[in-house]
Image (spheres, rainbow, N blue to C red):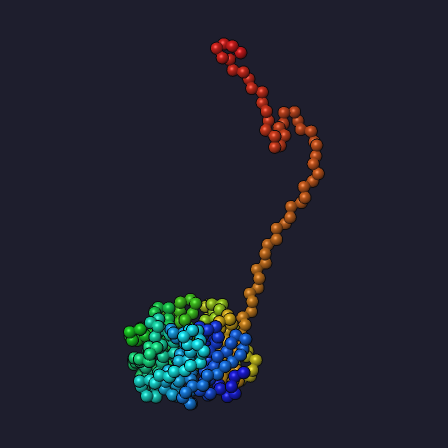
Length: 343
């Protein structure tokens, strides 16, 4: 059972076969086994408000501490040298009051995260060395971040209404979202090789190609406030609707299906593909972890061959003279050839 009042927020599967999540109000990291057993690991810093979480390159889970202004690391037990799990290390940030929010593992095996209050994107080694890169647009409020299929990092600029792209060397490009004041929030890489993001105020899901072309798809429920988004086991995108209290799926063609969450006003926040092939999500207000099992596909009917009729009884119908019997090679009488005039 989750600790009362913990307000689970970020969620991600771990390398140990479990699901890990942040407890925003409890200053703890939670671990959920596939069978639903939860274990808490308290942070050294009180009131740290851990936000989002990701797998690291070292078998540990890494997370942002938005109020404590730190990046945290918790061992999972996936590495024999770090068993048992739950050992927590914290790394203070370079900029004060940076408000770290989104975090992702980069293609360079470094931890990349957004700093909402100081308008920067930062990267950090597993030893805690930090490099920061200022975003060109002032006051952009970067939020979610994800590794793209092109070897760059992609992030949302909630206040400036843009999607940003940053190379591993720190070169940034920005792409305006067509819908004004849409507040892009969550972002992930889709199975189609594009980036997909939620527009919390625009009530849409957006898709941007690595070249920067954007398409938008409206959500059926008005003012749903889409937030976290992730690729599901079916190749579609799954996201949560915080205000509408729903889990939703959007296909690569832009078709949206919505599923009501059983607990009313649960305030779902983030979503992740679990190690069991199910879709997992956090319910901040309800203080629960949700798990959605995808419907099994309808089996394809198998064609049944029509049996041949059994053979009939043998017949002894006489054949005309000279007709060879079936299966019997006919024998012919050879005509002698004269040799030296003799027969």
